[in-house]
Length: 134
Image 1 (cartoon, rainbow, N blue to C red):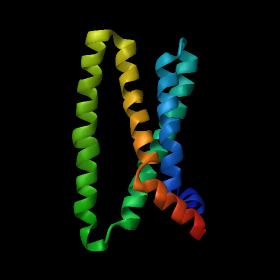
Image 2: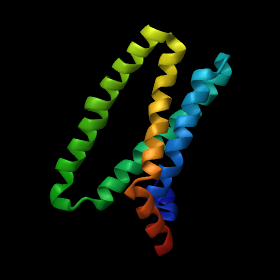
Image 3: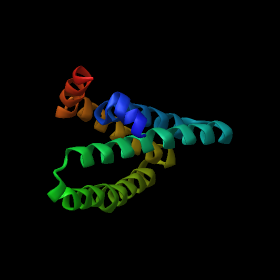
Image 4: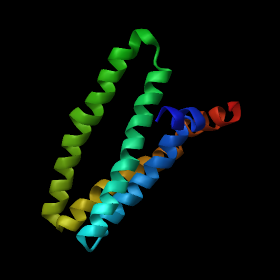
């Protein structure tokens, strides 16, 4: 990860891994056999971990030292304390209403929305600035 972030920057890694994660999650949900599903799940996990690690790396690089613990705590609480439970609840509600396949596609749909938001956010401008500086 340090080499990847050093060579490409955390914003670029995030911007590329986020849509890849959404696509791989969608492909995993749509896979028709367990071998294909397992391989796609592995690839999805790698892409998702790139997103998480790049986001944490970027947050740590950009946060002033005196605010580091507060910002990291807030970030972790939003993702793990709020995001995972609410996402699980919404996925379960969708699965109950429309079936398991729809429930499994609900998450990647939200990840795709997140990718669009990331590409249209200040993160994209930061990525361009960092690329020009390299």
